[in-house]
Length: 212
Image (cartoon, rainbow, N blue to C red; front, top):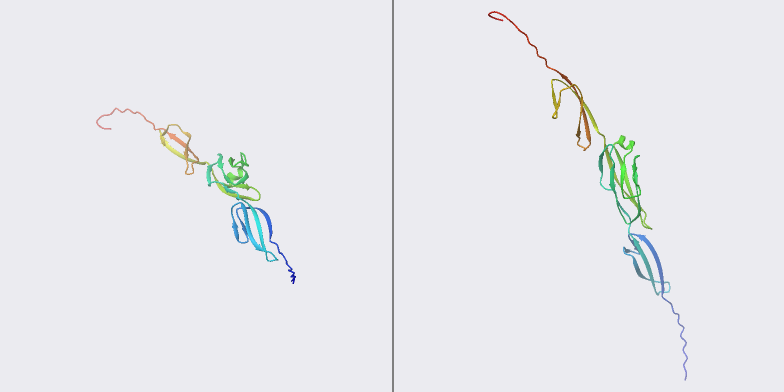
């Protein structure tokens, strides 16, 4: 005879999902460190107990880098050529802690002219800021510019007939200048105030007997 059996079936389905992320340098996805752009899959268990496969599409953008260069020293009255080194960037900008000016503050390679405040203080900080690609921000690096004044000195001499000053023969009273280079590589101007006194001669005659 016929035997009829009824099966009550519940079918649970696996599910899938996709996410997209754009980040700097790396991304931590549930403990998986991602450093390269691409598609990544992870399998989870959904509430029905079935597999749930999720795909993450990642775009990794390197962060910007900045190198302002080494500290430098110049003489008062001179300019400083500077060459910043940017990386992974869209734009750059130079700024100063003083009142000097850049030939082009938005160029990595430019020239800085110190202002009166820079010279008075003897140094100034130059900052090189590099702006990164979206979604990365910016980063900065700085250098110290030291400004050395020209040294000026004076000495006096009082002598007879002539005076030799570093090979310069002086025979007339007056002020004389010589320019040297100091330890910082800047001009050092020295003034010598010379007083030249002249020797004198005379002639006498005598007409005597026996002794004089």
